[in-house]
Amino acid sequence: MLRMLATLLPIDGGRAEIFGVDVRREPHRIRQLVGVTGQYASVDEDLTARENLWLFARLQGLTSARAKSIAKDLLERFGLQEAADRPLSQFSGGMRRRLDLASSLITRPPLIFLDEPTTGLDPRTRGQMWDTIRELVTEGSTILLTTQYLDEADQLADRVAVIDRGRKVAEDTPDALKSQVGDSALQLGLVDGSDIALAAAVVRRLLGEEPVLTPESGRMNVPLPDPDRAADVLIGLREAGLGISSVSVAKPTLDEVFLALTGHGADDETAMEAAR
Image (cartoon, rainbow, N blue to C red):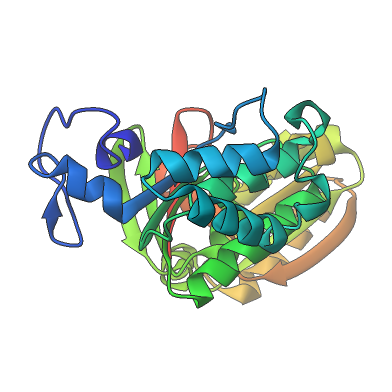
């Protein structure tokens, strides 16, 4: 879908508009309105960071002097000035991702597509990318972000569209989507992680709800139609002889929302789209 909207693939059905411009009929105008950053950096491995940005700017029709000026500004903004003249072979994954995002901002397009920009990043670099995205929004950019990290959608999005196997099944604010699942969720950690299937069966019997399981950590989240029902679950687990290591009641997560809407968890065939 993003490749079609960015004119990288022809639209094979339906129609799309960006800021009132028909994507199929006026692809050249669309390319002036959007910037694209994909899952993998599109920078040239044989060039330095400064040379990459200069080249992208020249390809977009800027003069050499203007290209150098913009490259300098973007390198400073993304914290890459000290590495500006190093070969990209010495860059970490996070540095390459920041450079890739910087290249999409050369002409400051009003709409930026970010296709899973934090895939494979360590938590620190991922947090830096989140801060950069928030800054872009504050400065007036519109961001269309795709991600399978549902906490990322929750943290960054003003509106969320849930895409399941190629079809949009819901769209609203994160809080409004969570309200469809319930006002709160019971978060449980089990002493013995191997008991999680049995614990899930107890929840289904007592509440008729499908919990979201994290078997590797022995944790599960249980949507609660009524916060008072948390006590019923805890009593049921005790009667079943299941030990609990931690328990808390909190608002539902987007993981619960996704499971409730689609009947399965997020995987390689599904994604959340977060639009800011």
